[in-house]
Length: 201
Picture 1 (spheres, rainbow, N blue to C red):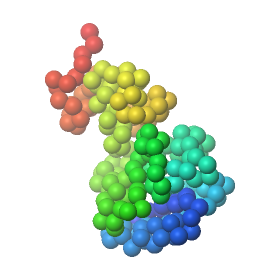
Picture 2 (tube, helix red, strand yellow):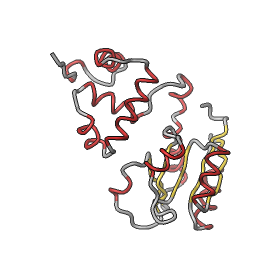
Picture 3 (spheres, rainbow, N blue to C red):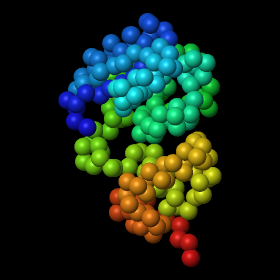
Picture 4 (tube, one colour):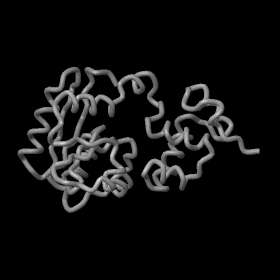
């Protein structure tokens, strides 16, 4: 994605002041062409995803009770969407483990710009539409080191179902169907060192 391309960002938050304030800050971030869609209900969120297909969703973890990322991604069929927690109150950090990033009310524009830019990952998307995400690279690294799905889930604080979904996406993107092929890919792309590879004989 090139910096001049429009980045659609949905903001799901019931507070008008917080939602609109964040939207205004995002629109004036330098080098990013962000178009925001403000959402105040679950129904509006589903409509927004269908119509605008945002690449990033910023959502209050307590949106309409409690926001369930896994259910949301499953229902929408949008595993690739980046979901960012909008922290407005004290939140248990365990509840944030499935989010790609978090934004705090006290983040300044520089911090916000860095977080959004890292989510968009301009260079990787521009070089290869099928490049692995950072999370997928972490999973490849774990697989090559001989870790089970359960061990990967525990290490990365995600569910086993999410690990399996990521592994399926990795296979689809790379068209690599063997452990040996994945190992070669990981070494060539410097995801692991040769001495980190766990060989199964």
